[in-house]
Image (spheres, rainbow, N blue to C red):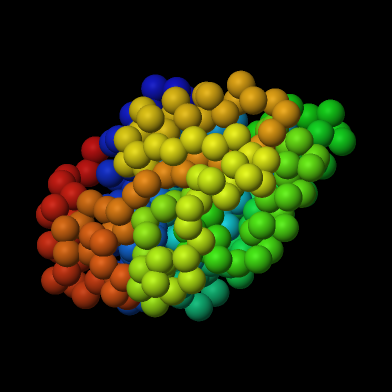
Length: 273
């Protein structure tokens, strides 16, 4: 891992690539991809033990994008880390592309598991973490959930499992942007209060500003000090973060920007590094 990578610059480049690939595809999910960018940037730029030259490295850290519709954020991070050429991003959602609408581990190097059916990713992450322990491995498993996804019952079954088996090397995030496709999570089927729920389920819980990369990294370091509980980092974010007309708008959950909207968004995000 190259710890010299700057998380904020990495996240900004991710956001630019997210906008470009969604505009080229004409479909996809900008809102939740943009809100999760800083979390994924910290993991891929500075934290995770991964190697683009050896995507299947046995001792690598694993990442489960449980909110699989935010695949553009993961694809941008993987491309920026050299897992595949940047030019491949333009093929998002195209027929036969390696970059499907949801991550496909059989098509794309660096993807540890197929995700997108909401509620199931944390269960898979639990399995990875328990398997690593049984194998005597010391890698970490990271998972990213959406707050709307926390309305799914399987999430809480996995939460019980992780606490029961004391999966201390499982560190999960909730992208808490307050919105889902149908509107406010508090109006659709409120999973609140999140921190109290995860604590009650036996997890080590922290809440951070999900757009403060230093705070995110510090929370990960604190989570690594806890070896007898899984950790949940509740990241308070803004859906559509970085693009003014997309921010905190449920309507941008699954609508790609038109060419003129993409141009405006890229102007707001600034030039590439």
